[in-house]
Amino acid sequence: MKFKLTNSNGGLPIIDDIWIEAVVHGRWVMAKVYNEPSTFGINNGRVSKLAISKTDTRDPNAEYFPQMDYNYDRGLDFDHLEDDDLLYSIVDLLGKYRKTHPYEES
Image 1 (cartoon, rainbow, N blue to C red):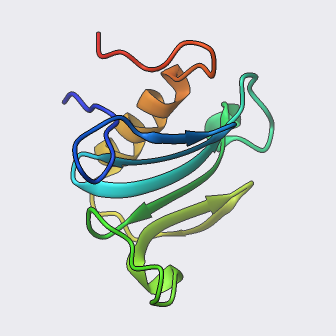
Image 2: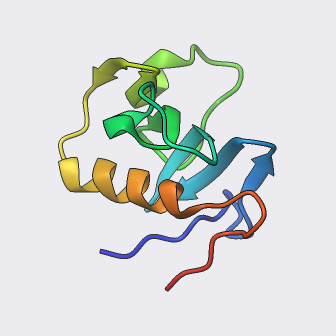
């Protein structure tokens, strides 16, 4: 299963310092990714915050958490994903991102 970071228009993801907002495999994703692994990261990795929505967009005018299937904020808040492979693929893809070297599909 291959994933590529894009924004909601299919272009480059929105990257602000260590925050990444993207659409990955049809899901809106917001993540905080550090350059070094941490005990706060998912599986002690570089992704310390991750939200995965139920769809490819997020409505800023609606309540946040009801739109999400997964939320991790230095610890798991909830996981309503039915596909663990989706979660691990997203975390793996985000973990490959480097601030100075934008993600390129291999």
